[in-house]
Image 1 (cartoon, rainbow, N blue to C red):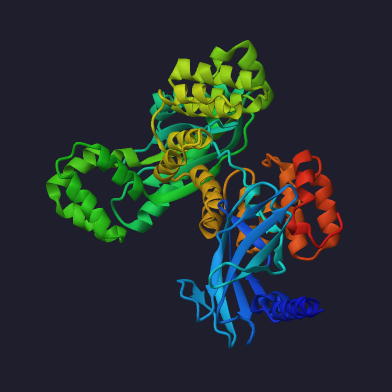
Image 2: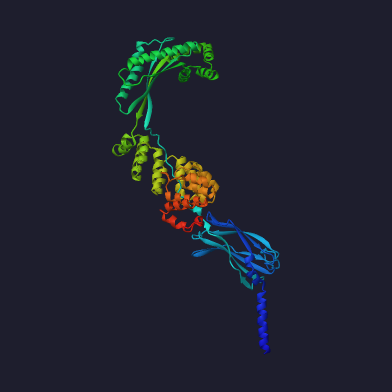
Length: 556
């Protein structure tokens, strides 16, 4: 009987002891510990998930002789990511852990996880184990939920880089002029028969004949511009210039009767100081620099003439070599030449490619859709003109087809300018050599290079820099909008995308997905669903949306 009583008493004392255990107390009162997380939604940046966790232990919770082991864990469907363990101790424990006072204390820790696929839909929790100071007894604490999900929006970045092309200088309409000049004697506006039959007028009329017989050329306007040489009073020369304009008009009416062209606009310019400066600059006059300096020093025509006349020997030369050429009327026909149309260029590129010059070949290549046709035309421009622009553009075509080796080969023969370096940077980027790519982009500085660097900046978590690099980027605005989303500038992100994807957009489904994210952050549910419907044309995006924390508040 006594033995039975002893056993019962021992069991009672054991239960009592266990019930009063400091570890058990910490286990039972764990719900009073307050945990906060910044950010409240975890975000993955450059492959890392980092957060600041603040834990507040209430008074009388942490036993002076206890040790607490805390394990940060991301739990997701199919696995979990375990962070570095954290250790805390009461003041009576002789370890080197963070001390927590029994009177209550708040501790703050930096938590880090490496990204693994699947954590987008996850739970971040803290798992605790309380133990005595000898670590011989333990009590597992209830897990503390800290946050839900991981934002991985930056992973939507388009990583292929932007390859630019060289523009052509092809002109659909080429302006030109046909011109003849009538010279006048000193202080005279009288038409001389020798001038009407002179070589200048013969050439002018021959040009008008050629225009009349060329269905690609059209006279768009005519004019007569009359001048006087800058000698004598301004008033006299203004009147003389006007009379020469009238004489030029009479010559026009006499010589151009057979042409179906409009009457000329007659202009009188007075003293021709611009022509004077040009002829002096082109001459071999010994003191021409001195004359030109006088012209730059004085704007008053009377002062100019006086200063030049003071150089008596020089003025004598001017009277014989320069001034006679300024006493004139110019008869001008303004002409437009209609170059090959787009349809003609495409046809000539097939039937008579040799008829096209470099600019026409460069333009023709932009008008065809098939990469093989573009390659053929650019190769012709390279063979025929050693065109550096064609080499860069051919490399761009190769890159669009994924032919990096061919692109590198043609770039090796091209001028190593900013555009070439930008394309070389994209090749390095696609080869996984980010260091070389960034070096090329920095040396290039083209809009395409900045856009490609912006993608790298997004991947590296440098969102502000990316937004700056991508502002006004050429081509598709996907990455520009993404950068603005990542820095919280939603209005600018929406503006970058525009209302609809235009012809420059290389990824309409992905751009629609970004619009859905913008709408979700703005609380516009109808726009979220409308844009996701467009995004779902891409099966990967449809699958992504199921676990995307951006849409956690919406029933998808």
